[in-house]
Length: 280
Image (cartoon, rainbow, N blue to C red; front, side):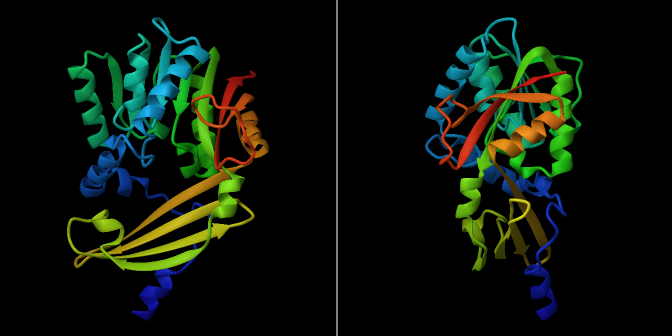
């Protein structure tokens, strides 16, 4: 038991493990995540419905979207943004590796007469001959990826974007990083049964990496017949560090916003958004 507790409380190297599939593709947790997505009143998994509608309307106006334009939504979930954008006549592709979310999105599109190309795939592996006028990545998804994964993805965006196209995404700020604290919590049926339909014991260890500006929420879930560890990494950015990552992959950040609905940028926000274009 002592050795197991030592393992549970061990601080790994930044981005040393990648377990996103355990969250988004597990039968039980993917069902819980979809419920969060579809709750119109909270900002968990997805933005709330009112924000998504306002955000989509702003994107359509800001980036001149309409019939003949193409948008790719990386990490589209159940298609909340894709559906709003498609209503304007935009051609939309949504990529996500949560099979449950993609099935919901496809069903919603069919029932509402929306032509959206949903792809059930890890977006790090996504390839297509299509070129897009706008690529979006919402809900700070970039922050969950390692430096190598972020580089792979931004280079993929560069390849998939039209010459005058735009990448729009949001990230967590250093202000948010400052507010995070290291903790260790142990609970029965942690997060109200989120991790399993059966009884379990859950450990949460939050580690901060000051030099890298990274936070890890490390969940250890102990059930009767199995033990799982889920690593939820989050990278926090300054405008300068985000510009540097974009530039290394052939982009220039043209404008910063407070959010993906076009609000004015503030250095005091816990998140910010960036619009970038190719420079070569």
